[in-house]
Length: 306
Image (cartoon, rainbow, N blue to C red):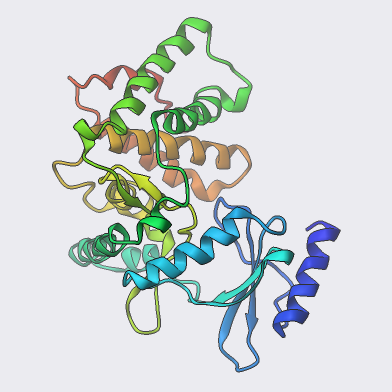
């Protein structure tokens, strides 16, 4: 960490009255750092350090978390916070997320775990509108920016091999059509509150046995199928049974292409743990793009697993 971040961590430790572990826990894609720390009462907690002080993400985590809890969704408790330090103290739910439960379960039980997780979406959809609209909704332009990210990392090797102009134009035309369809209420249904990253690694079993939701600070209005395809078509969920029949092809494919870019970026940064996720996403895109689909031309850009 930088000297500035290290000083904020020390100040937050003094303020919260905890002694965090010296090393940060291994995280996912985000920029927050997590340090295990017991509270004065002995309860397990995590000291969360944001990349800087007074971030909108920290304010959104607190506000959206409170709204989710009011809607019946279990989230980690916010024990204390210091926005001016970019730090918070939150409930520690351990190291075992839903992907571990799925990996250890028989196939039929793994499917039931996904069903249990999907039931959480009823509570997310019922969240107060003030929380659902805290972040800007998904739009075609928002999705297009994600597809540009995928082009850069998955198709152009992080900028090392730019697409020729004609190929880039073909990609942008196909990607643009996919993004427009994914946000069209006529095709996907009216927008609902979406978690935005609702997969097994962001779900953990709380002490009372319920599944708790993590990383909800980016919640926003989006297509009704968005969280379902995230849960069932990427990471641990992709190995079970895929999305149920009837989900929007456009939403499923836009999300899959989006996370392909994320996983490719992580691989190019040396994070080999993302390789099976990347390979699984490629299989999902191939399997779930119908031969007669208007989005089938995008398959010509799909990289081969390596």
